[in-house]
Amino acid sequence: MQRSCRSFSRFVVSNRGFCSSTKGADNEKIVASVLFERLPVVIPKIDPVVYAFQEFSFRWRQQFRRAYPEEFLKKSDARGKGEYQIDFVPAPRITDADKTNDKRSLQRALDRRLYLLLYGDAYGSPKGQPVWHFPEKVYKSEETLRKCAESALESVIGDLTHTYFVGNAPMGHIVTPLTDKNKDADAFKRFFFKSQVIATNKVNIKCKDFVWVTKDELLEYFPEHSEYLTKMIIG
Image 1 (cartoon, rainbow, N blue to C red):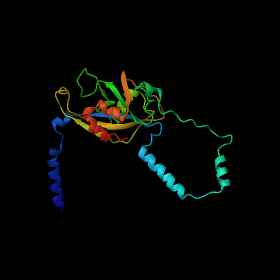
Image 2 (cartoon, rainbow, N blue to C red):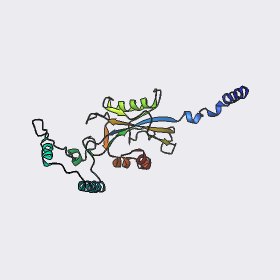
Image 3 (tube, rainbow, N blue to C red):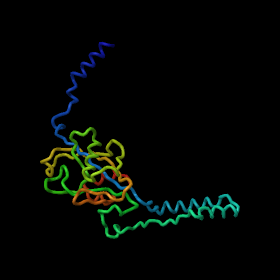
Image 4 (cartoon, rainbow, N blue to C red):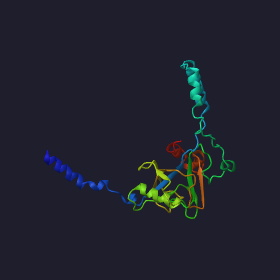
C-alpha cells in the first residue's frame, strides 16, 4: 500500500506540468469592476395584484376578529397623544431631480436601486474613445481581487467611509475575447463586486461625467451584455 502511494505521488509530481498555466493564459488580464449601488430610500409602490390580495386578506380576517370592549379601544386610541406626540410627514416620492431627469443626483428614483456609471477610458475599449463603464481597475499585485475592487472604487470617490462591500467573492464575471475592435489589447476577464452607499445621500465623484441609473436604464448602456446583466443584477 505504501509503495503504491509513493508511486502515485511521484506520478503526480512528474506530471504536474499538465496543470500549469500556458503562455496565452499568462497574457490574459483580470479586471475588477464595482457595481456601486444606492439602495431604495422609500418603500417601493405595492403591485396592484399584491395590494388586492392584502385587501382581501384584511377583510377576510375582519370577519373572524375578536371583539374588544369599547373602553379598551378608546385607551389604545389615546396612547401617544401626550406631550411626546410626533407629527409624521411622509417624504415626497417625486423629487426635483426626477422632474428635471438629473441623473447625476442621488435624489431621484427613491423607490429604486441606483447604479453608478462613469464615462471615460475603460480597459478593452479603443484608445481615445471614451465609453460608459463601471469603476474598474486591472489586477496587478493586490493581496486579493476584492482589494483591487476597493482600490478601483476609492480612486473614484476618494473615501470608502460610506461604502459597504457585499461579500469577498465576485458576484459574476464576463470573459472578453479578442475582436477586431480590441485587437490591440489582451483578452481579459472582468469580475464584478457589489458595493453599497451607506449613511449618506451625496457622493463626490472624481470623474468628468457620471450617472446614477436604475437597472432598466443601465441595460440601455450595455446592450451587448444586457441579458447577462439582467440575470446578475437582482432588484
